[in-house]
Image: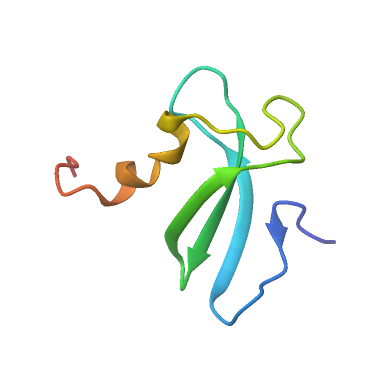
Length: 73
């Protein structure tokens, strides 16, 4: 059984996962690029029926939710 949420890796240690953005109530589809398990890039998912690959500034900055020095742990 294959996992629809992951695309094949292009380079060793690079993985792209399809998921949903939770930065606002729209719940747009996003693609998250991971390198060695850490988030490196967030972009819109062109296959998602709601946003069709377009992502807002909040969604693009979602990476800061994970890595910001001001983040509360």
